View 1 (cartoon, helix red, strand yellow):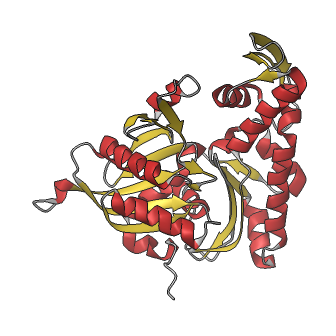
View 2 (tube, helix red, strand yellow):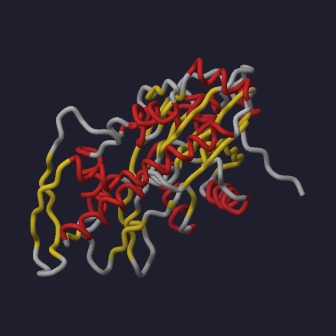
Amino acid sequence: MGLFDFLFADIAIDLGTANTLIYIKGKGIVLNEPSIVAFDRRSKKIIALGNEAKEMQGREHREIRISRPMRDGVIADFEIAEGMIRAFIKRGTGNFLSSRRIVIAVPSGVTEVEKRAVRDSAEHAGAKEVHLIAEPMSAAIGIGIDVEAPVGNMVIDIGGGTTEIAVLALSGIVTEESIRIAGDEMNNAIMQYFKKNFNLLVGERTAEAIKCEVGSALPLKEELTVHVKGRDLVGGIPKTAEVSSVEIRDALNENIQQIVDAVKRTLERTPPELSADILDRGVMLTGGGALLKGLDERIRMETNLPVHVADDPLTAVVRGAGKSIENMNKYSKVFIRKRTY
């Protein structure tokens, strides 16, 4: 290590709609917090971010605004996103003053404009060199798939903003599908269900908790019930409703079907040799959405393919980005190339 190396850090970031994870070369994952920022409406000064800001969500007063600068896997609020990235890097790195190289995982379907926004944010946050990697590729590397091999692998990464489906071989993406249906849309479907069927207004945090507790893609051996607190839309007063996992499954069904249909579309476009590989090796599920009860079984039933949930699916993407920063020479081919005009 050189004299000034301690001032710099090589960093990998999974800049997710729901969570931001940071990996430092030589240290591993140092931060895993919600991609949420609380700031003063007048001065735009960040008051809190991550877990602290999430605790405030839905409880803030008029002087404070809670923002999620990432929407559908890309930057929606440039200024706040930049501040969040800078603050998270500072929190994750501690003593490091600057970042020499940053690898950021982005959805495979991002536009050139969206890529530019991510690069600019990272550079303004202090990065000297920015590389982008597609989330399904990063997830595949993170779960130990040999992406360089002349063998087809299918990865489905279900995050907060997007579901990324990709068939990978020879360090590249052969076919892909990126849909903006994922965890956030599922939360939204639950909120709409309560509004329509119970005249009950529930918050985003409550909807997410319900999804994690009783949400499922297939009937459960033992159906569950949960008591939900919210505001009565008719009377305007707080009230409690009791719902079962059957009702929540009904609320989620349309979104789950859209994900399954996207998987089928990707399979239809896959070359036959790679299809044979996928039949042998199966499909890998990563991302927070992979933890939805029965989702692997639902995809298995609809595609007749073996489906496996990765170990620790929530950190698969950042672990892959981390591996790529640990061994830049080996993984240089997997980075998204800048378009030359």
